[in-house]
Structures are given as structure tokens and as C-alpha cells.
Image (cartoon, rainbow, N blue to C red; front, side, top):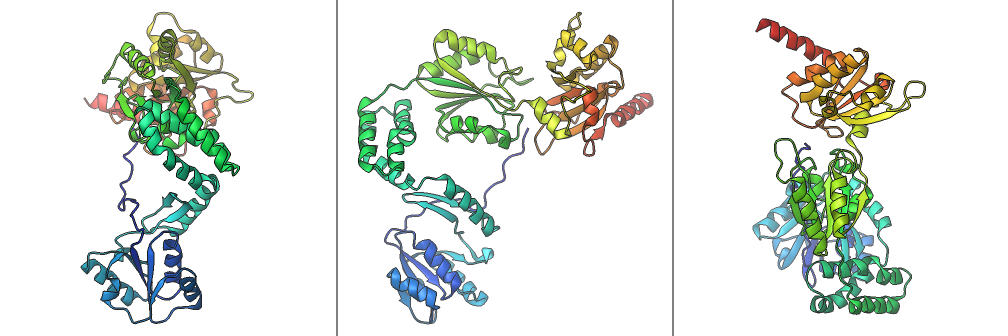
Length: 479
């Protein structure tokens, strides 16, 4: 499983500064930069410096800011909501920081993170909408690069749209029941006709479209998205899957889906862990089917998160049938299946011209019967086989395939936790595969790829299976 996300040392908040004083100590470029930043707010700006550079003087005059043209003293901070030490002088900035903390004021010292109670973010301003990007003072240039990317993404009309929404908020709360119906209205408001009209500058038309949408009050219809969460790495999630998570009323997820992906959903969405992992089956498939139908009938937008791709060994067919029988709307959102992630980890071409032109997805459990499955015959004929299995069936898979005629020296690649930073990679031959069963250090999901194309992979960062195989034999002999 993926490691827990790193903890923030500085938590982002939005502080009310309307009509409040922000004190900036300094008269040069650093002070001007902070003045311009805070000038985007409705705070009163106080500049404390005996003399100021011409650019800052012009800014003070243009923005009606207060200028105290004296040597700094602690009483200049009186009544301030925020303090900036921006003099460029290390001793003075430390003095300002010490005074502010003694007075119980939050202070930021420019380029001196050890003196800061807070950090100023890079801002994308679509007032009243604001996106703030911070790096806890570690990488200001990176913050600016991210800000530029977000700035290009957000329409200039976004602030107007938010302001229009504020005028409809009370009416929406009065006319629409709390829950799915109200969220459906706001989704249509921000993504539908009101937003489109504002983007082309038609303010009156946008207001009329919003009023019509509110009076229509359409009933919220339930919908279930059967979503592939991918092999584990959260940046392999599709954009569509992420969009659905952000609008979901309920999230139903398997045990193999990382918390980092579940956390991409709305914070107030209901969460239903349903297990479905070896040794911890918290719900039966019938119970999961019943849950999905129930949530859909309640008019909720549901995201059913499945590890990998929902159509590959995910029992999605049973869930689709249950939803179909109940008349609940649903759709499939594909995901990156573990076989592809494992192949990428090894740089293995799953199909290779002149070597193999077919690919088989299977589980090791298919070999438990007396009859050899068709895919085993395909493996013998040259197909690449991706086996979704735990290490416990490795010996059985290898033995049956060798008995069926697949060469013992056929190349094999094995990866635990494909796509994740803590993945473990192994390579060898079919004859080496049984050594997996004696590895107690593998607890995550294991993918095995078998076939001649595997030999073309990159094994510089993997361990030979044969090494562990030899060690196991020595231990057995010693015992």
C-alpha cells in the first residue's frame, strides 16, 4: 500500500483582513512586493520606514497607504492584524519579528523562514475566489510557477460567477432540500448555462439562467460511476475519475484503493469501505450490490472505486447487473490496470514485433482445476501472460505451465505494489518463480508477467529470483 501523505508544517487558512491594518516594515523592493501582495486585499496598509524608494513611494500615493516616516519602533505595530519584516536588514527584521511575537502578532520575515509565523502564498486572484499556493517558504519560485499554470486554467469570469452565486444562496437554501438536490443545482449553476453566459460577458442573461434553473428545481437523479482507481499511484488516476470524485455524494471503495485517492473526493462525501481484500472481507458482493442500488435510489452521485481497471477481475459485471435490474443509472470509468503498471515498472514491451502479438490477463487460481485453461495453451504458443495473483500460488502456476510444455527458462518479471514508490521488483525464469512462496517480506499485491517479451525489460533495479531460490535451498538443507 502507499505510504501516508507528508504532513503540512504550515496549514493554509484565509484570514479576514477587511478594514484591518497590515504593518510592513521596510522601504525597498521587499516591502514593495509585500505591499503589492496585500494591496489585493481590502486591508489598510501601513508602511514603516524612514525613507522609501521611489517605486514604493509611488505605490503608497496611488493606493492611499499610510506611511510612517520614522525609524522603526515596536509601537508602530500597534493594532496590526499581520506584520511583515521586509527591511532587507537581518538585525532589523529579527527585531521586528521579536517585537511582533511579544505583542502576540503574527509575523512574516521576508526570506527568513526561521522568523516566520506564517508564509505568504502565491495567489491567483478571482475575487471573491482566491487560490493560494504555498511551499512553507521552501521554494517560492515553484509557487510562482504553479500559480502561473492555475491562472491559465481559471476563467477571468470566475469571480463574477462566485458573486452571482452569493446572490442566489439564500434562495437555494430556502427552496431546495439539503443534500443531493441542492448540490445538483449548484453543479448545474457552476458548469451550465449561468457560467457559459458569464464567460461571454452576458451578466443579465446569466442571472436569468440561474433564476430559471432554481425555479425548475429538477429532482436529483442517482447515478453510479464504476471507477478504476488505478494500480495505486494517485497520479495515475484519470482526469474523469478525479472529476467524478470531486462531485460525489458517496464513495464506495475497496481495501486496495489508497487513502490518498479516496481523499481526492469531496470532504463531506459519505465514505463506505467495503474491504474485498484477502483476509479482510468486510462486505459480501451481494451486500455491495445492495449498497450501490440503495445509494443510487436515494438520488446520490456515487463513485464506486475499484483498484486497477473495474472491468479486469473486479466483479464489476455483477454490480452492473444489479444496477441494471434496479433501473439505476451507471457508467464505467476505465483505470490503469496493474498489468500495465507492472510492465511500465520493468519497461517491458507486452507485445513485441516478431516475438509476441498477443496478451493474456489471468489469475493463478485458474490453474486449480484439472483441465488446463485456454490461456495456458496461448502462453505455450508465445503470448505474454500477465498473472494477477498472490505469491501463494506461484509454485502452482510455474509447475502447471512447465508440465504443459512452457520452457522452464521462459523469462518472468514480478512486482509487488506496482507503480508505487515502495515497489519491489524481481526477475528470473519460470523455474525460479516458486521461490516467491517462501518470501515473507511480500505483503502487497503481486503481479507476474511471463513470456519471451519479458526478456526485453530493464532489470537494473530488480532482484534476481534465483538468488532467493538458492538461499531457500541452503536453509532447507541446514534444517
